[in-house]
Length: 489
Image 1: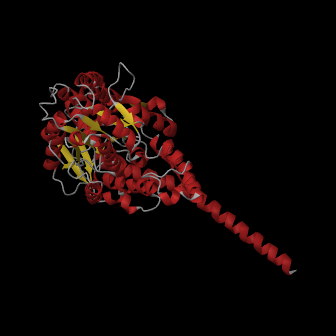
Image 2 (image 1 turned 120 degrees about the horizontal axis):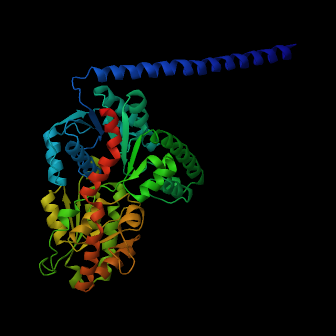
């Protein structure tokens, strides 16, 4: 009898759990759509009550004052829209709270040589910390992605645009702006947040800046991280494919985005704008005009993925190859910018590492230099150095080539797929992977006959016209035009 009552109680409890589960699902299916419709109607009402009646284009770029390649794309896009659609009102959502609008625009002109009209509204976002990696010691990708939704809600509450253009790759904001904000959604994606290459590193247990040593050494942690990556990749594909117009910056990015987002018909490859027109017109200086110094130039933000330590290790190896009298002429010029305190600390670590390798007399750090100073350094340089693994494109590589430097870049990503050609007769640069390989190639370039170097320089200069500002502007406006046509209709 006791067994019977116990069985009945278990069955009753299971039935109750089943009923509760059904009720919750029904509530979700009924209440959630109602909430979403109500929320969308609120934003639609906000749009109709705006004081401005012209089309509003919102650029979502929380780090618009950073001064890197992504910001060059932002300002080139803004300039293109201002020229083609002068009556459009442009809004930039930024988290640079300490930067006045005039300071931001002046920096864009100083670093990128873009003269942006001051008819721009800046919406300052106070929740940017929620997309910072330091907020999420674990599950960083997921944390930052969810944080971007929170940041996007702040942007949407501040001002509802007609056209939303994300130029930093925050894909989790696309459903928010499209389905809740009722906006046309476009994106210029520089690189996928997660890629099959990252998954391969975890599967093969390779240590990298995205795969810590403690995880790579543990098969169980590696297996768990691989499951996490695959689940995150599935969700990333769902939200990313909500963009109506997808622009990518390279063949490498296009391949990965197509494999994850699975919407190739809406994906357009548009190379980022590079200032090749002015750089290719700069005169090539002879070795005598350079003061017989051998300057190896790197232009890259002080971020972990740029792999500045590999540059210093390559220099350490180069010292053992070159004769002492030649080595004394060699200088590595590290040109870059810092986004935050972490980047500044990273730069100081590089300075300490250069001292550790006894390279401090042969390495110079130049932070946040002006465009005119950058031009001078590019003219005086002999070699352009780039060490990032799977660089999505490489604007600095193109600009070094246009200025007349012989580039040595990492044999992966955009540089290998789109920029550098190593075949004899059409060679415009070199590719390497390890420090020793970089050192041998740089030694080879240094010991080249000047005529051999000039031949590579001329081929390199001739190959970069496809990456010009003019080509970017034409392709960007052609791709984005359907958004404006429908709004105007």
